[in-house]
Amino acid sequence: MKRFITWGLKLSISFYALLHFFTYFYEVEFLLDLLSVSGLLTLLFAGMMLTVKKFKLPLFLFLVGVMVLIFSEGSAIAGLFNGILQMRSIIGLLIIVPMIGWVLREEPYIEEILVFAHKGIDSSRKFYFGIVSFTQVISYFLLFGSIPMMYQFINTILKNQKGEAWENFKGTALLRAFALSTLWVISIPSFIFAVETLGASLWIAVIQGFGIAILGSVVAVIFSYFQEKRYGVDLTAALQTEIDSVLLHYPNRGEIKKNVFEFLLLFISLFGTIFLLHAIFSAKLMMTIPIVVVVWTCVYYLAKKRTRKLVKETRRYFANDMVKQSYQLCILLSAGVVIYALNQTGFGLTVIGGIQYTQEIFPFINFLYLLPFIVILLGFLGLGPLTVMVLVAGLLETISLPYPPELIVLSITSGSVISILLSPVIMPVIVLSASNGLSLLKNGIKFNLKYAIVFYIIVQVYIQTMIRVW
Image (cartoon, rainbow, N blue to C red; front, side):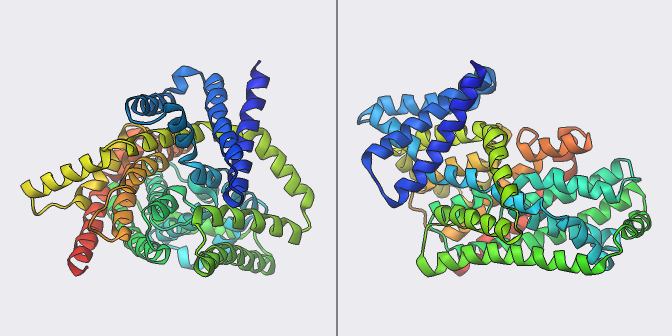
């Protein structure tokens, strides 16, 4: 029975993805109905495999959506089918994006970039900034999987350094880096969903987010300096010793330069192709990105003459990794039903009325001050960055707000950054705690609360200034 459920789940997810891409170019009503059915089967099989206890969040969202559909005007069955299709683009993106990570694992790119740039990271401050910066780049390939991967990588360098001071140094660098990547990295599903849903300019959103991420990285380095002083340790001396020992294992500098150049070429080709196609054809990003990722991955393996490895990775992904994504996919399917159902009611008008009433009472406070706290609250309720973005941005799509969409995107994503830094019940902090053995509260609130407050102030100063200018 368990084998039947597992295969049913794999097939339903696969059919959902294939039908999504096919019906995007050739929209046939019968195939759209099959797409909805495959989404419902994904929910059914995932619920059977995970049990009700582990499946309670998707089940709760799904039941809320169904109840709203029943009490709203129109057919509940038609509304359910349409709701299952609401998140089809982001689900298609989420299924394809992990392929980027296959490429990164083919060569020791990360280790050799460190060796190549060792003179620029020979102090604790430089090393911290380097890790924060490079983790954001790696997040482009691995999403939050960059946290455990980079943690293990740093541990191979600092294998002899133990204690809370070192764990604070490593953990805050990685968590802050991944959080900041959600402001500008276009392969992060939550960011690209917000940009596309709210109709923001990709160029402006990326440049704006990247600028804030740089400021956030500098502030993170300043905080790490004071943390080092508070712990009363000299991290630089120990760091230099460890880096020197690592360099002894990499005598072939020619091969290192080759792989560093190859990594840069991979990054620019993927990033640049997506931007170029979006600019030339005005194609939807959540369709452009998965198509580019599939072609880019295949071209890489063909160029390396590793077609057998590509087939092996594809089989492994279908057999194991796709099922691991089923919980998040089901949350998105259920959230789509909720969003579609609420959009059939007067919910948007109610929100607008609430915003206007609040601004009448507190004229010095606008909606963009408060929007990050909605995201943070949902994060502390256990909703991850993507789920929160789907719910919040999906509802804001139907509301006309008197602000540039790029500023709305920044306001939402800044809330996502803070949620990632602090919430002990979402994946980034959980993954970090599993890696370094410290408690969820210590890795989250204790290490990052002050930083999160400063980050919120920086973002709001920028947003409110731009509102005045606009």
